[in-house]
Length: 318
Ligand SMILES: [Fe+2]
Image (cartoon, rainbow, N blue to C red; front, side):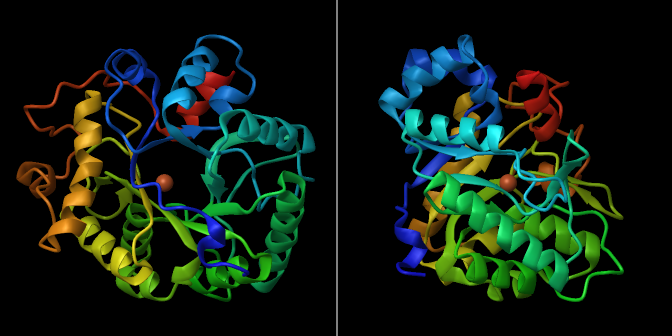
């Protein structure tokens, strides 16, 4: 790697741009460091989403986050999709383009789920080769995120962190460390999340994701429908220490509360770093009873039926 973090800047503390917040953002122009947009929601749209995005990019820094690259699929790379991605990145002046270490479809079909890969040599070489092709086409580094996973493969021969480390170094790409995903996957697979984070190539991490999840007791589902829990804040503090600090983004995709609540959650990250203290104030009842239906009384939810991220994207794109 020629330069630490591939020369990408620390943008500060951002929020995922979501449809229910469009009116608030356009009217109040909140003091947000940056927005992350779901690439697929704007690639084919010439209507309202594009009109809103036009106003957003005039006032805010933007990063593009995709869910359909399917870097691990055995299907050929989709150059029509990549062409649209490149055009959108040029138009939005996106600071970088990210997606996930996963596959989302096969035989030309998009299942709109971020499916896990077997972590072995064959998969690694397949993914590394495809990342290099994508980066050459986009003429910029690709940034890839660790997904939340619920199954493992008997074909895996290495840990996820070893796979991700070798992938980033051999393909010369960046990493988006989703701290909540680390917690979710490690809980589901009985692994140590601190080991996971300590074992990554920290100089290649250019962005963090934070989000809430649903603890079902025997397993955790990455629902993005609640506040960040204290254990994830603890991991975020560790990741911040090991990386020296990178752009941080809060994702909230279901039961989306008012914009100020979502923005306030990412600002806890800023306060945590500044104060160097304990995990911030995750509402006690949100952690004590992890049921998704238990919500802080002060939060006005906009919708109880907004589906999870990939489906959310599909609904808007199709
Ligand atoms: Fe994420």
